[in-house]
Figure 1 (cartoon, helix red, strand yellow):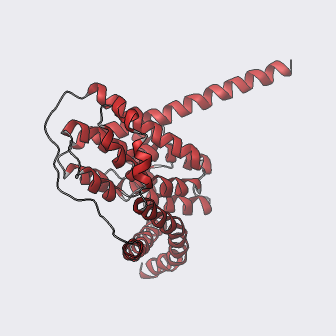
Figure 2 (cartoon, helix red, strand yellow):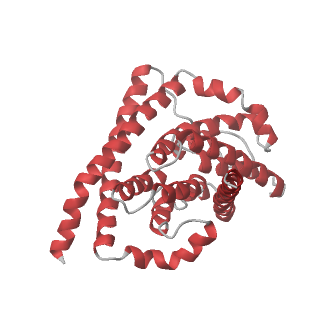
Length: 316
């Protein structure tokens, strides 16, 4: 038993180091770029042009800055901006779902690109589905004028040096976090594989995965993506693809689901702590994640049928 555990750890450490470095190469330059965009007011400038679009989904124009922030950064930054604005609980619920679908977009889409998905395809999918979900909620949620809480102030910097110091501090924290989480996940994955537990965990979830339109190989990835998050789940998925335990086709299908509904634990609880309804933000994301996968499967099926007809017609 002890030898098998040590074997898993030995095998996991080199892989975790490689995958952690890969994640950091994506995350650190992007986070620095975004801080510079914030400092020079470019994000605020972009948000100005989105005001009319946000009015269409029942949100005040000022909330555009929250969505733009969430696209470039993790949710904590978007929540800091969100809680500094005046809005109703209904508006906050719609905005929360939009941010949950499209947050940290550049980093997470770069991660999914390594596992068979188009970077720009994922960007377009997540931004468009954020607005589709917002339009849906704007039409089904009852009128509610209950004010949303205002608790935080947006971080302000007086100099470029202060921006770089803040980025360096957050980066050091991020490096440690990524190393710990990725290493733990890689060891866990190998332990589960070594002791043949992945199938035991996956089997009860396979009927649910079929409802979602996902392959039988997806339960473990679905759990990781919804408990830990898409970036870390993507690291595990990339490792499984490299080792031949997951096809790019199946990985791409899982990516389409997780693009809309991931990190159902931590990210959801951030908004629940602010008073937003848990079931609305979870149910909406799962519903649209399921619709995205099934619509994609239907389009692929129609395309395949059309190709078969064209092939038959040209060989008669």
